[in-house]
Image (cartoon, rainbow, N blue to C red; front, side, top):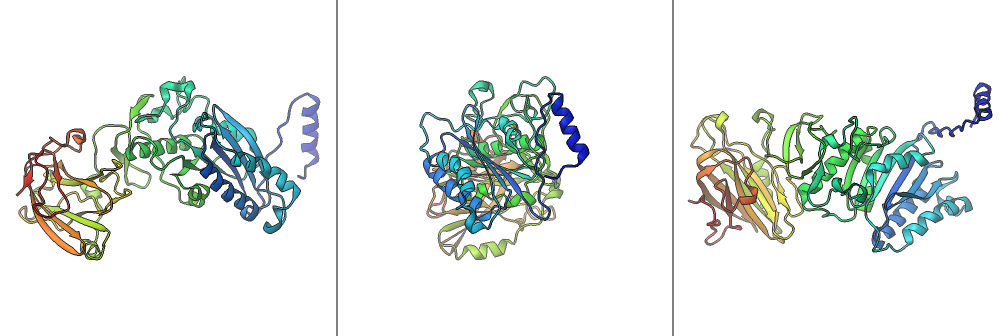
Length: 466
């Protein structure tokens, strides 16, 4: 790299005085989007994942990376052990892999990824130390990509009190910068380079207790990286291809809005508080009751008839549409919600988790037609679509409202449309607090679906079909 005479003299003077001078970071070539990639792979990463990762990574290094791009690999156990570094040499994409210089640099990657994992090893990634490890090997000022491969749940034995196993997730205050902090999520943490993009390749798609926990883990790490250098966690995925794809860096998820509180661990339950950067409701997994945005924030209803018309041709799915009588006053509106639970996996689809692996909620409708005629059904439907191949429990929750609530259920299955009237005879709203006791709660109604003969709900609840 060219060096001016004053700069050269300065380096000589510092060397004479016995001061170590760090090598300046290489600059990004003009007109090119060069990249420095940091891969952190857990020691116990399984052989199948290693094979796919090796194939995809080597293809990128040989065929897609720009000359000068840098790749680093760390093995993650109790700490981060550097495995190898590869700087892509000049030359055309087709011939660079045959160069001795390239082969020598790539060999440690191939050796580590080709090795069989030990059952005694860990899937721990030690994520709070990522920034420090990146800083220790970083060679350029190129845009940075971090790819994490392992268990998203923090479980470092040196910090047992901060383990994310079970349903535990650190509070937001455990990651925000504070003096005299004891949290491993901010004490001694080194920032990542500005605007670093991150993907996390989870060891399994269904890691952790349930989908609420998984969302909570992803949200926490998004906040963690956001606080430490403004880095952006793009996704948590079980797909190697998705983890290696950082195209979403130009359209990252909205920033996380931290909730004030004490440092420590909280159980992962769903709560909606405040608005995000774009003015949309934020689901925060820190415990407490479910809340919804004000009525004036609800966007117009979906095209109900279009969805119901499409549903007539669906052979592998059943569609259920729910509507109910609107209250006379908007201030005292009633709100019924679908809750569909996959019996095999426990995954629950509802307004805070509208898309699951076997069910999809099209719309969270807050109230019916309005307050012009309390005896008429509202024009909006809350619609859920479920796969016939999976077993489900179907619940209706009285999120808000009380007394007698009349509703209508439409079922479309194998091209047949069936309608059934439903009545909550003495409903009591619970804001979705009674999920643990919904079998006996008057705020919950279990339906035996699909409708047929007799098509009746569970008798465990006070509300019944008319």
